Length: 496
Image 1 (cartoon, one colour):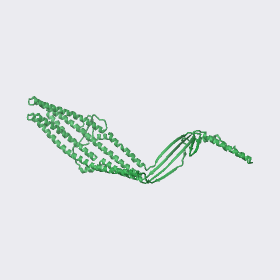
Image 2 (cartoon, rainbow, N blue to C red):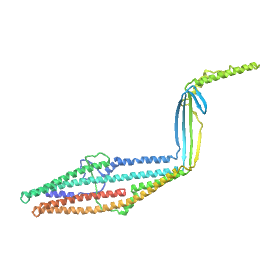
Image 3 (cartoon, rainbow, N blue to C red):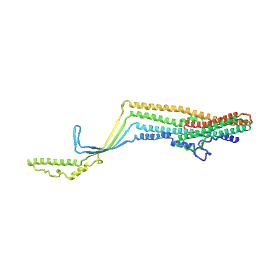
Image 4 (cartoon, rainbow, N blue to C red):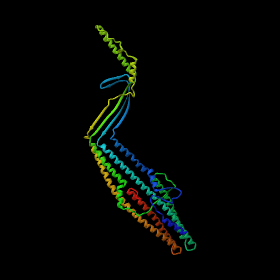
């Protein structure tokens, strides 16, 4: 049985760590396989924080369209109606009265065009801002990938430690069997058995803690992915430990050229410079052009109001004619005749007047076309322009300082991550040696205990050393992978 235990320990010590991005060929049949690439893809599709940042692209696109739309005229259309009760109104000291209420309607279509030097600069500034937003999205996408990778590795590390605790429980159980066997033949003591039982209990507690940690870290991984946890998900991506083949100078050059964060800051610096030109454009002249079409309709609600006015006018004209005709006859002139069609008001005329009055709401009288051109030169506006120019220049300088600060931080981050990675690779090699030597020490202590040349305390001490060596090796392996992921995050792109 002891041989089987040591074989299990040897398998745990030789846990394979293979190529990044490749699916394990030994993934369990049951459960849903989840690779690192799939986890990253799901996170980019579902992580709420990342989606809220990616949503800014729509605003940036709208700003670019708006800036380019400044080269086109603006248009506005309107339609209105009005009801006015009949009565007397006073306008400029004159009284106007209508015994009939009126209905009015109007329409207008106006075109306006305004252009100055800022019109030509704003599209470039908006495009630069959109480039910065794209770089922000790329940067957050890379940051999300790094976060998911770190958590993915944390889950694998927790699983490796859980598997290791399984092996250590078997080791503790084997030592308990050994202590009981020694006591049965009279060469061991009850104290040895109790120590072995305590060791087994401690190993079982550690196993429970390790298994719980696996579930907690899985839950956090799915939280980063933005999807509900799949209880039967199996992480299948494995990683290989290879000595770094790239130089620090290459990484620094790559980071300065492609890191999304510094690319975004450079885009914002360009946008700030263009925004300064936009602010200075307020000192330049502006040409404004406008024209429009329109019409009005006017209708009396009482259809007989105009008919009565026209009839009364005809009767008044006929009465006047009779008066003049009587004067002509008295002075011996021939009668002019006041009974012709000009002095008669017919039903046809009344119908025509009613038809002409029926205008509301869409029988418009078109207004004359008008065209306006205005050329304005700004002179003084209470230093508002100066304030905006000063503010834009400060924002430009701040953007420049941000680029400089990010460049310094990038150098420090990449250098630190590179040194941590190289140290991690050396640490893995040393921990593997320590684990091998600790295994040999434990085997030697057990053999000496069997033949009575060592106490069970020696075995317990060697087992504790061996357990810690295995744990340190697992931690060193995954610390290396996490350091590699941190270096990729600092550079701003995958490196393998």
